[in-house]
Length: 440
Ligand code: SF4
Image (cartoon, rainbow, N blue to C red; front, side, top):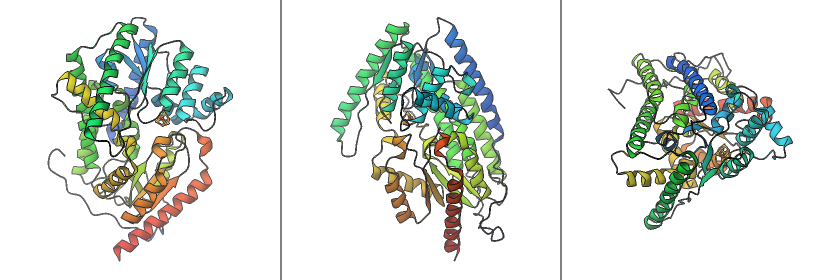
């Protein structure tokens, strides 16, 4: 953490007068969070411009694909998963998903995929999650295999080329020698990808540009991680209400100055709050520090405000943190590609169960977490896999309540308001009891 470590204030105990009941509590966003809207609007305008100017080259990429390569190759990136969550937040995802289902895609499939199918089919506008036809599509099978079939289907629909990376799963027990073979295998694919891009766009990679983008991407991640360091404090100066939107530059702008300036502003706001001993929750209202795992329910962000009404504030999310790994700088071009290959294999969503439990238990300690919410989101198998085992391990080892939410990131049909509220209240009761026990 930069500068001096600020004083943290003691945790607020449960207020017995509220008796576990909700009161209206408003989480305060960092002042600079409001700049995000402008950043996203400028991105959407640029997207539109790139789609109509014939000499501009564009690509659809997905989570797990190193977007830095697009900027290094002068390709403008579109991100259908990001567009899908805009549809969710703007409350149009259900219609788009149902459109995809009428085309024959099953209810069990990833709702981002179906949102995108519906968005393309209905030609919905960008501000509602629409996306333009790209010059080509590129994805990987790291994190999930849906990306491959999804992009193949849409590439066929548009009649444009698709490049798919095959990323080996480096499961526990893989020795170093085998791991290096995997790295060789991925690096070969980088070279195939550069040839593919040159064939379809005429663009070639300049090493100086590649290093410039990598350096800026690392700076973005450095700032992101510094903000998370401050989230360890009590009260936390930054809530999920800020980070859930603020990941946008990590997803789509790594390597550009705009994201860096935005994160510098967020960090400055964070430090100002800490210096004044203020938190994201109003003074004295932070009762329970929550870890939330999974993609949020974009159509129901209100859920996190409901949690706040009981004094619960989400102070750490493995999902948002996972978008900002630091990059190794100062390596040769060859070594930088090898490092990029390692990062594509070592994404936290590829961790084994044991490693995942260890990771969660470490951050529970570091962020003084009182309770965990796991989003058992069957739409996104990689983030929902092993959640029952994870829940049991955390409850046994850390003795804190864990709530599992069975819903979906983009499909509101999977969100049953009544039962969700009942379970939230039950969770808060467990948090309150736990806190009372620890005070005895
Ligand atoms: S299953 Fe999850 S990781 Fe895969 S495309 Fe859907 S949201 Fe993305």
